[in-house]
Structure formats: C-alpha cells, structure tokens
Amino acid sequence: MAKTIMFQGTGSHVGKSVLTSALCRILVEDGYQVAPFKSQNMALNSYVTKAGGEIGRAQAVQAEAAKVEATVDMNPILLKPTEDITSQVIIHGRVVKNMTAQEYFNDNLFGLTAIKESLSRLKEEYQIIVIEGAGSPAEVNLRDFDLVNMRVAKLATAPVILVADIDPGGVFASIIGTFELLNEEERSRIKGIIINKFRGEVKRLKKGIDYLEKETGVPVLGVIPYFKGFKIPEEDAIPNYIQGSKDYQLEIGIISLPHISNFTDFDSLVQEPGVRVRYLKSDNKLEGLDAIILPGTKNTLEDLEYLYQSKVAEEVIKRARAGTMVIGICGGYQMLGKSIYDPFQVESKKENIDGLGLLDVITTLEQQKTTSQVKAKLLFKDIFSEEYEGVLEGYEIHMGQSKLGAESSPLLEIINQSGKESSIIDGAYNQRGNVWGTYLHGIFDNDHFRRSFINKLRANKGLAPIKSTPFNVRAEREQVYDKLAQLVRENLDMQKLYQIMGVE
Image (cartoon, rainbow, N blue to C red):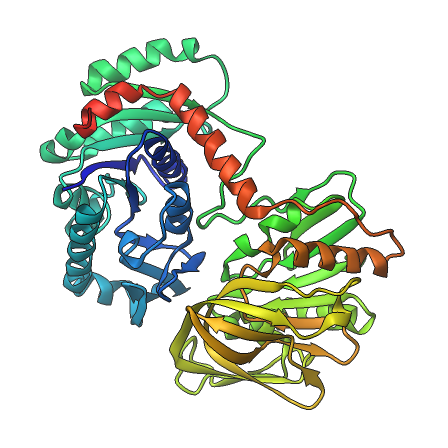
C-alpha cells in the first residue's frame, strides 16, 4: 500500500497546489511512482481525462508533474459554482446534478464513499500519494462536513504539512491561530510547517521560526522563496490583468466574465513574441485591440446578460463589424450565435436569451454533458496567414449543442473523440472570416496553429510574419516542473520529509 503525505494550508492561495506539483516531480526524480490527490476541488478551471472524465485542472497539472496519466480518482469530487450558493456536482468525472450548499452538506455521504473508493484504488496502483487539502482545516464551522482536510488525512493515514503564505504578512499569527483552532487529534496530525513565498534573507526569520517550533512542537521544514521567471498553470485565480511582452506589437483582449472558466486556454498566447494579453473588465474600452476573445464560462446565459447590462456586448458587436477578429471558446462560442435556449434550466431560470448575432448559430443546452479529449482538422484555411494542415488536439467540456445556419460554416472536423474515430463538425466562422468560435479547449496550445493565428493578426496590421520556430508548450511545462522541483528541493529538508512519510 502506498505511503501518503498531505499539504494543508492556513488559508486559500497559500501555495498548496504548487507545492503538491513540486513534490510530485521531486519524488518522480527520486524514482518513485507518484499520484496526486485532492478529494474535493471547487474550481471553474477543469480538465478532461483520457477516459472522458472531468476533474480539476490543478490535479491534471500535478499528474503531469508526476509524469502519469490523469484519472478521475485523483479528484473524485469536483464542484463547479454556477451561482453564489449553487454548484454543479461532479463525482468520478460525471455530472450528478446542481446542488445548493445546504443540499450538498446534508447529503455528503455519497461524496465520502467516492473519496474512499478513489483512495483505495490509488493506494494499490502507486507507491506514494501526495494529497492536497483545500482552504484551511481551521474552519471550525465546516468540521462536521469536512471532505477535504483532516477527515481525508485520517482516511488516508497521511501526515500533514501545514503551508503558510508569508507574502501578505501575518504568517506567524496564521500558523499559531490554525493550531489554536484545531482539536488535539487534528494538531497531532501536523508533522511539519512550510513557510511559502518568502522575499528576503531566511536568517531574518530565525527568531520567528524558533518561536513557531517552540509553541507548536512541530519543525519548520523549509522556507520557499517567492519565485519569478516561470509560471505554473493557475487553479482558480484569474491571472494578472495584463501579461506578456512590454514591447508589444499585438494586443489581445479577453473578456473577464463573472463565471469565467478554463482561462488557462490563453496562457500560451502570452509567450508569443510581441504579444500582450489583457483581461478586460466591464469599464475597459475595446478599441485598438487586435483580437477579442470571449472565454469559457460556467453560466453562459447569466454572463451573456452581464455583457448586455455592462454595454460590453454592443462594443464587441461594433468591433466585429469594424473588422476586428472576435473569437469565442466554448461558452464564448455560444454567445457569438443568434440565440441560446435552456429548456431544462441547466444553467439558470431563463429559458432563452438572444446571442450577439455575430455567427449564424443556435445553441440548445442539454442535460447530458459532453466531456472528451479530441483531435480535429481545421476546415477554414483562410482564417490564417499561412495554410495549416496539422491535426489539432484539445478537449471539450460543454452542456450545449450548436446548429449552424446558412451564413456560417464549420470551423473544425473532429476526427477522434475519446480515442474513437469520428467525423463531427465543431465550431463556426462567419462569411467575412473575422469571427469564429469553437468548443475546443486548449486550441492555442497547438504550437503551429497558435503561431499561424498570431501571424494572421500581424498580417492584418501590416506586420511581417514571425519566422522563428514556435515554442513547444509541453516542453516548456516540463522545464517549469523541473525548475520548480529544484527550487523546492533546495529549500526544503527533504530528509526530514521522507522520514515523516515513512519512506527510506
């Protein structure tokens, strides 16, 4: 049976996900078969496994760091918020139903069963399981409903490493406060402390570290520096609103929707030479942008209504009619059409809403969710400055089906869906060729496709094409995992950590 170790935090965004990725890569480098695990994840950034199950994006990243195929057992429960107190509940990669927080808390036995089943399978298949908690174990109001912190540590017989973020200040209070709010059994599970995101000289922390170890009786295993120069894909925090080249020649605007999801789709655009990516709020102006992207969303109807109320919709329409390239991914693609119908009230109580009318497409939301990894061929060659013949890879996550009218043409042909040969039309483009949309997440991670797209924007602006070989997204991520592992290894007492895990 596998050994286990668990990262819990003094709060959200302290770095648990990143440290889990780092430890997964370190353990693989040291010769172990490793699996990440997060029992319950609440996030709008999700991923589709090879078998077609939907899990949190963070666990897919951690699996990649561990050099293993992501499976639904690595994240048996995924909660995707649709409204303030309602989430779509996904168990073992499949949608169960939408539930309010109260409904979920009152009936969480099915979730606990799924967690036990997944843990059991992973323990049989791997040597070490690196487990990530969520939020903080000190949320005493949630103790009776806990499915992600100390109860999971107990189920997995996992020693706990408490992670605290020093960057915003108050790190010592957050650590001591967490210990004070835990009961004796919970405190006894914490075997180490990590101080994360430190800027400065570690020797300046010595008095504070000595105090922590004396007060808690638990060793501080390391102080991890705040790192720059490389980036791990985000779990659920929207990235900086402006990213990319300072000396930019192209600027791409992404509409920051209230329920924005899978915005990791656009991380690779930031790496392109001379490109700046800007996430746009409702008060931002859209003029001067070389392309506008409507991203995925967990609530297409409500977010489309937001676009109308904020006047962003009329600005997008105005820019599209002026010739600016406008792109929609998944829910953003649905918004570009003429109308969206929700007869089963899958996303909201509204039964239909008018789309932006930039594509001759009508979408109907269905109760059955489409989740699959796909390969596709591009049908519209004129959209790019050079002919693109390659096979595109990505994944689909959507509730709706879209039908094209006479004034739109299909963008892609899906030739393989979840490992099976197929011939399915996806996406659409308009007659002018400056508006297109697709259900294919990860489309910009296809290196030559992305470069062709950038060169098209450059051609529209009278700029010469970029001739250099486009950077390889997958190779780049591998280098990032290696750099992260090296940084953490150098600043963590790995010998002590191995002792805590019971691994020689």
